[in-house]
Figure 1 (cartoon, rainbow, N blue to C red):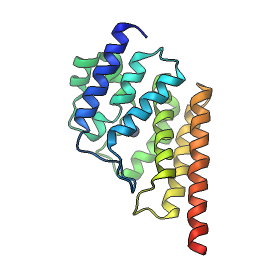
Figure 2 (figure 1 turned 45 degrees about the vertical axis):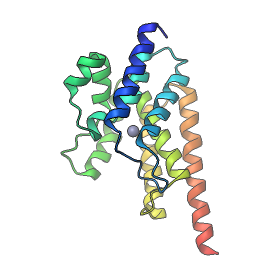
Figure 3 (figure 1 turned 60 degrees about the vertical axis):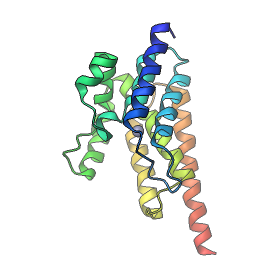
Length: 189
Ligand code: ZN
């Protein structure tokens, strides 16, 4: 990565940490939200051997439009047009009902740019890892299992791009399913 690239990634991490400062993950351990962003950015950095600074920066920023008071123009001003476009590519239309947004992710993900699909793959990997280690307290097993199924459907549109990321996702999906199975077992006893 170039000096310029390192600067971009560092500024993106700082921007994202500030914007998500008061947010926590849904899981029972209420991890700081920024842990999700560092995980997604690190997965992308490793999978691309640190070559694609814009993709790593977008990894940090990928939830700013959806979950914080951040405008597209702001991202464009600070991080340039391709980072802003990449973030907007992985942003759901929040005016739509949740079920419709989830359905559209399955439909549109295969049509997205290569970098957007890599970002999706890293995002879903992080989310399933969290589901395995710290599931939301108010989710029953059915809801968690449906979430794993849906993630796999979205990710089926991201395959064939990067083996490391795919393997990380598949491992996270098995971990999540194993954790669900363990929960069912404990309840039976
Ligand atoms: Zn995310």
